[in-house]
Length: 93
Image (cartoon, rainbow, N blue to C red; front, side, top):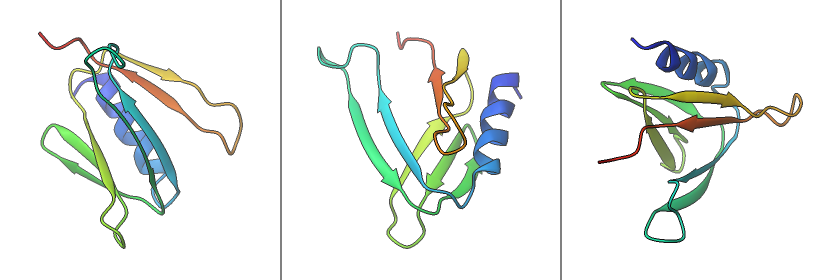
């Protein structure tokens, strides 16, 4: 498994049970791209083939991320209550 994939899985597993805000967008958002924001409370982490799912069991709210092909992980953490990552994937062809 790729090093960045291992980093992402380890990070998310360490924060299982906490609340997550997720903002997911592509680099051409606002032109023809996509963007969404969600809040997931008391998350459960599930790994499947090629992806990791962050879900809230009571409401069924979830998002998932590919765990392969991550080019870069940037730690944007600003303190103990503001933990953040930015993931970069290669552009789709």
